[in-house]
Amino acid sequence: MRASACIGKPPVDAADFKAAMRVLAASVTVITSRRGDQLNGMTATAVCSVSTAPPQILAVVNRETTSHGLIADSGAFAVNILAAHQQDLAGRFARRLDQPFEGIAHGWGETGCPLLAEAVAVLECRLRERHHAGTHTIFVGEVIGVSCRGAEPLLYFDGAFRQLA
Image 1 (spheres, helix red, strand yellow):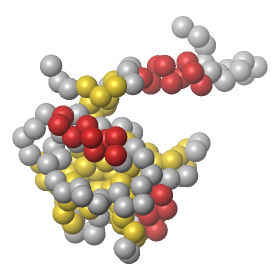
Image 2 (tube, helix red, strand yellow; image 1 turned 180 degrees about the horizontal axis):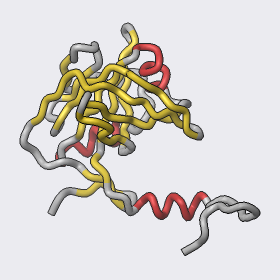
Image 3 (tube, rainbow, N blue to C red; image 1 turned 60 degrees about the vertical axis):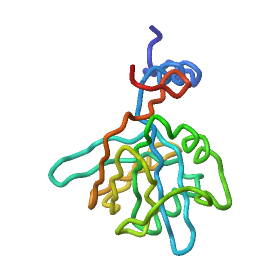
Image 4 (cartoon, rainbow, N blue to C red; image 1 turned 180 degrees about the vertical axis):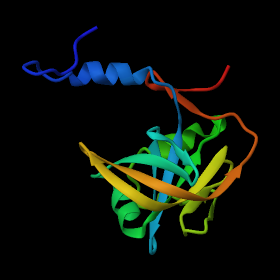
């Protein structure tokens, strides 16, 4: 194992860091947001629970993305946990599209954010905190609505989409 950054030592190599993070299996989500008529969604695995009282989750978003500005300005976002059969949506929302929801089955949440049909679970959030970390912002949202359905989640592990065995 290589040593991490210490006084007088260089920081961890980016390739080594990425290799280590590839073996951290995670659910695949699409974070959706809205500001007026502008809608966006972005594929993300950097999402986790923060608290149950009050219910809060966090989502880590690159500051250069469209989603970052929409979440920061609107104060709301939704986390759509994708089902195993929704791999095509993960690929779609990993790209920058002018009309990201065109032809995509979705509804609307209390916050006005789009909610993806057939997602394993959807958590609607109002933004409570934000923390800058490197090139990203950690958005902490208070969960104001939840819907769940019985389905297997889509996972991401070692650079590929996976399903539970």
